[in-house]
Figure 1: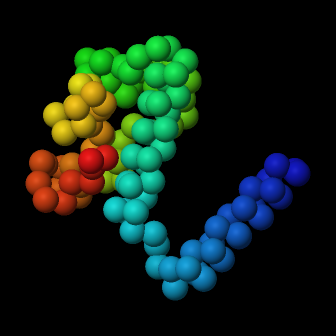
Figure 2 (figure 1 turned 90 degrees about the vertical axis):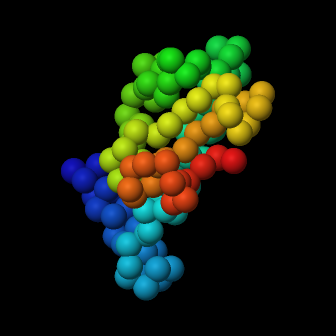
Figure 3 (figure 1 turned 45 degrees about the horizontal axis):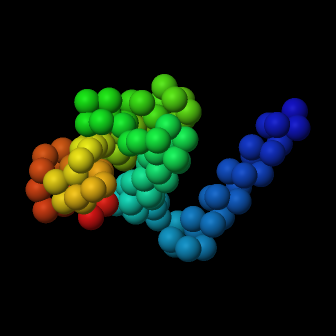
Amino acid sequence: MLLISVLAAVVAIVTRWDDVFFGGRTVPRELICRGDIITLTSQLNTYRMKVGSLPTTEQGLEVLRKYRYPNDTLKDPWGHDFVYKNPGDHNRGGFDLYSKGPDGIDSDDDIRNW
């Protein structure tokens, strides 16, 4: 019962926060996607510190789910898989991580970590 009460309070606070800061509108998917990329980048860096290297492109982000983050989604807000490349084409010595955006294809609306 306590857990349900706490969850209800969190939902009420988040709903009120959304009303105050976004005028009752939902948070744009692009903003959520940028936050997801920041979160995944942090998780990849933590993985690198613990394991000693980043996952390969072949291992992909799925290694995060198997290794430490089983509840995180690896899809962008439009339901597409995030693209991960190591080594990166744009971040030499690092990795590229991006969403193909709402259209699901490589285009100008992609949201990237570079």
